[in-house]
Image 1 (cartoon, helix red, strand yellow):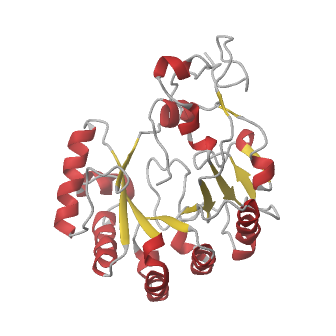
Image 2 (cartoon, one colour; image 1 turned 90 degrees about the vertical axis):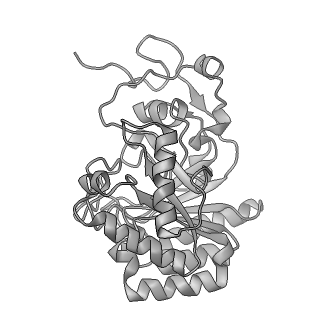
Length: 310
């Protein structure tokens, strides 16, 4: 039987009014620098790999109009997030980081801290940016688990040791760090934080495993999962505020292979679903409410309480 859920943008499969989220003002603009990555993870939600270039590298020229648009808002500095793929594979990554920081914004960059980050050119550039803007720059390193066996089963043999080497280098050179982890399906949050805490202590990272900004544990997103649909009544039933959803204050810039310009999506999770491509500018992309018409709107955001922002 075909699952009829998440089909109609305005009504659920039961005919109830679908939940939606109105724009509340920009908190975080995400830049997806492309889906190419040095590794291929089993459960990567965006299917990054060494061969997937469905989202191509952003250039500084792609990014500049969006930074100009933020400046025109006159609301001051924002959080700019950079994700991928692996951002340090993007040829223009250091120029993009420099442009973000020199305009006064804070920068949150997501990386696997492996070989692309450890190249001498990138290390030198990072050290220079840390010297200039270190207080406004956070590198959030993704670790699929705090144990080598589970992590390597997801990311490939040797990936745990390589990530630990990168983390140690960042800590040694005084970068502001955070970790992004996933709970194994068999452990609860307390167990996960204790496990990551032991890893943090071993590597001398100087971050607190109890701080939800320094150690972010994301809900699992399983492709093909069928969570409950979110209706307008769910906000009250679940005691959840729609203003806390990512799409209330965050957008992501992507550039699709074969297209001449970047576009804006509703959030970091739904880069491929054209229903969540909202326009070629922030103005266009914030004009209408976002209908919660995808399983991950329910499982990650509303029910899971997840957000990619700091």
